[in-house]
Length: 95
Ligand SMILES: [Zn+2]
Ligand SMILES: [Zn+2]
Image 1 (cartoon, protein in one colour):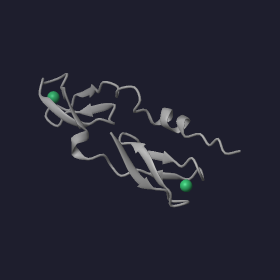
Image 2: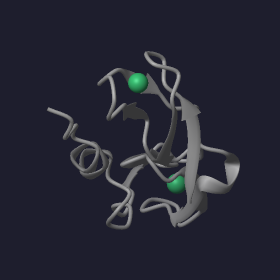
Image 3: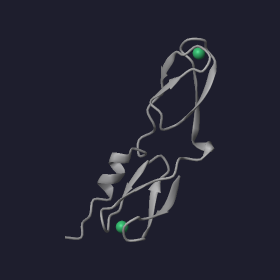
């Protein structure tokens, strides 16, 4: 589940997990915004209020039901998709 984008700084092609919203370049440390995830990155949950099934982007942490306005907490994304972990993996080693 990786995507590619071109670094805003050095124009390198960077691989990043699709759930990431910002990608830190390991070469020039420029942070490039990732495009929004495609629709297949949506998940479902059951509203705590009216028990409707709601579609939400996986990156969301809380989902507001359009029917009853109840806010339901989304389950955390699976390990490995965390942006912070990815940034750590890309910490520049070229010193
Ligand atoms: Zn770069
Ligand atoms: Zn609801």
